[in-house]
Length: 235
Image (cartoon, rainbow, N blue to C red):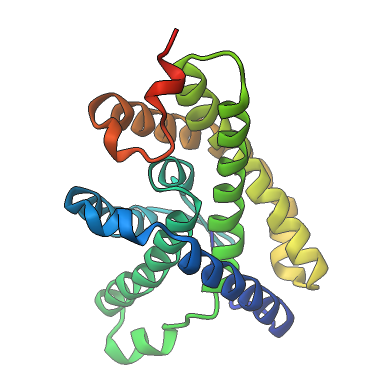
């Protein structure tokens, strides 16, 4: 989910501060040495940024205030871990704005496209659409890794499918709470009226995340940072 209506000052500054703190922590804690040591992992890292931003161009607009689309942050967290998932998400959001600039140029002209170019929505989009599902996926991974029941399907289905479905609902709930606390009435009203869209998004979000997570874990388990062969496959 992305917001199309620019946020008010309270919403913008509060989410900007939260985003800044999370990104500083992510930059500090990210496994840069492991990423630098694997060229294939670097390729997947940059491919994920490009793929997410292109996917997010395919959206449904609601009242000119929100754009709904699958986020796929759950599988990104499963593959890269929480820190890199946050960094991939913010990079994809910035790249998305430049893609939209090119789209507006086709629809309008360069002057109109640059006038509509606005990065103020990125902190809100990051906190609601990136941080919330990524943090939830990390919590589910922690729970699954702590279970005594050892089966790869608890990883595929528990995190990739059902985890992504619940994360979608948490995204909608956190958006409503954030808009309520920051007195963003236009955003809050639309979220309340169209909250059913988050329920409609749960299955496609879960299916896409679960399918990609399963395929990567089966075909390229070394690329999936959070998957543990020694835990899920041992007797």
